[in-house]
Structure formats: C-alpha cells, structure tokens
Image (cartoon, rainbow, N blue to C red; front, top):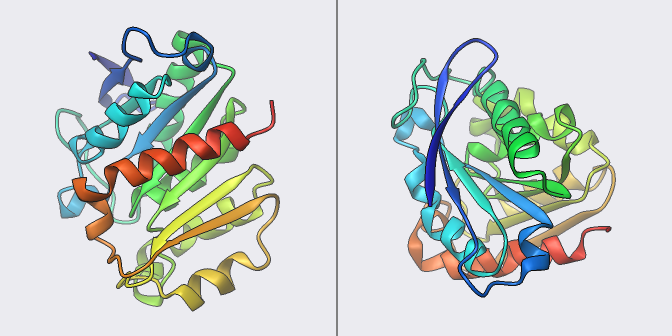
Length: 223
C-alpha cells in the first residue's frame, strides 16, 4: 500500500492510496485493469477509508486498486460541492494519474453511493476508462435534486456498465432503477442484492460480495 498526492486541474491536492497485488497474485491481472474507487458523499462523511475493504479484496485478486479522498474529504484540500460537480474533475485527475503512472490496459471506475453519479460523469472524459460499476446509484426523486445533473453522462455512455443495488435501498426503488436503465446505451448489467439497504452495502459485511462482482465484471470486459 502506497500513499501519494494528485493535483486536480484547479490545484486541489487529493490524497491517494494505491493497493498493489500481493506476492503470488496473477501477474497478468496486475498488468491488466486498474480499479479506481470513488467514495460516498463527502458532506455526509464520505472518505476513501470506506472503500478500503473492497480495494484490499481487489488487490488480493491480482488487480491494482486506488482509493482517494475527493476535495474537502480526509487529507485532501479544497471544498466539497453540494452536487458533486466539482468532484468530477477530481475523478478525472486520479484516472489520468493511474493511466500515466500505472500504465494499465484500462481503468475501471467504481462509484459508491454519491460517488456513483460523480464517477459516472467522468467515464467518458478519460479515454483510458473502459468500464463502470455503480454501488447504490441514487436515482430516486429526492436524490435527483442533488445528483440529477449527472444521470445523462452515464446513461448515454457506450462503455460497459454494472449497477449493483439493494432491493431495500431507501434512495432508489428497483422500479426506478429499471426505468432509468431501460434506454441506457451500451452494455448494461444489473445485480440486485435481496433485502440490502443503501447504507448496509457501504459496510464491510458486503465487501467480499462487491469484490466478486467487480472482478467478474472486469473479466467480462472486451480485451
């Protein structure tokens, strides 16, 4: 595990943590796809540490993983925005750092909760991003007041997408998710976790399941 700092276009300093595959992990995987994880809503206490379990699990499976604090979170400088619009640039900066410094075949963006719409808005802004995974995308009406501006970017992207959601998610119903995705472009997969609530899926009890879903999605991506 290594720490570094990445500078966003406007000068914000972003604290980044790199998780490398353990000794003995598949070398082919290590040089394949790098996973960038985007944490939940900074204003409600979201920080990169919430994604450490998933990052460690992905690294154990042979893939390099990166977590980072968006502006205003954890060790990063700058001020968080209410709608996540400024944070899209943070995701872009980190993805470009990963592409330039780790030189993977491609980057997979994984966003959790409010990190999902923010990551989704960055998917087509960085050529090296080859796929996207959402954990609990807040598509519901109330959440859309804040994050609705992000919806079109990911729904219109042709890049492969996986949406993971609990059937008891308090921000988005299964029907709302299905309605949003029915006209989405490109390859779209969904995985529903029966009985799981929105914040439950952010907890460590679901980390192993999230790792399996992310790794299996990577393996499904076009070479």
